[in-house]
Amino acid sequence: MIMKKNVFYKVTMMALIAVFAISFIACGGDSDDGTPQVPTGPTGSTEYVEPCLDFGSSQSHVKEWMSGSNWELSEHSNEAVLLYTNIQTMTVLNYIFIESKLHMVTVAYTDSGESKALAFKSEIEKRYGISMTKETDPSDASQYSYYGTATIGGKKVVIMLNHYKTGISIVYGLPD
Image (tube, one colour):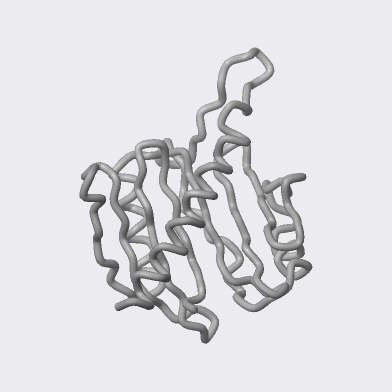
């Protein structure tokens, strides 16, 4: 139980970092005529993003995996973090490296709708064949998390979906 709480707190902290990272793009994204661009997809909102989940890989592998996409590598990236933004969908990908190996990935969305969070939860459960457990913030029931453990690429991975008033974040991380 202590290990579960430790992983929970680490993952939550990384999710908060990702939510903070949204602030780098939240004010941008105006069109040529000055009106804000609203993130849209086939269903009218931000779609589920599948990040590079090759845990243990190097930064060069992740950069190659991300190349050719609509993601822009942020100047705030360094040897421990690769931060990618997609202004059109107002989504942030945060790759965290420990000892030069991919250890955690966070996808942060500015879409905070409960229906979107439930759709993402369903997609994760379907993709990884897991059931996620809900945990609600006792001080604010509108903020909650779903978490579960999956095997991805032969590695045990903790997955946590966090629903905030300002957005949704999905964290994938290797347990300690």
